[in-house]
Length: 132
Image (cartoon, rainbow, N blue to C red):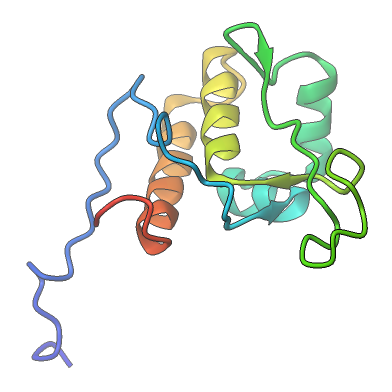
């Protein structure tokens, strides 16, 4: 098995530069999209109630602007439900901004923030938004 994998060729860049947004100039509207439950469980290791509570307390604000409030079409392919009236869906840029907002409000510690950002970066690499 080890003969199949060259450690150098398989290396994944997980370095994160604090204050530098991965998606500052990248359009991630093509997905992937995550439900509220997927996003809170996978990226933050928390429950949906935890995130709703943070939102209610005003902790999901970055530079005076609420983050993670996008509502997407429930049936995007059919266009049945107009944007703004569907269930919450989060893209990688939303998750990145939420993580920064929670870090700045000291809701999550730097270690949890870093783990979240590494997962965001790996997803960005898997979906071709940035190079591995």
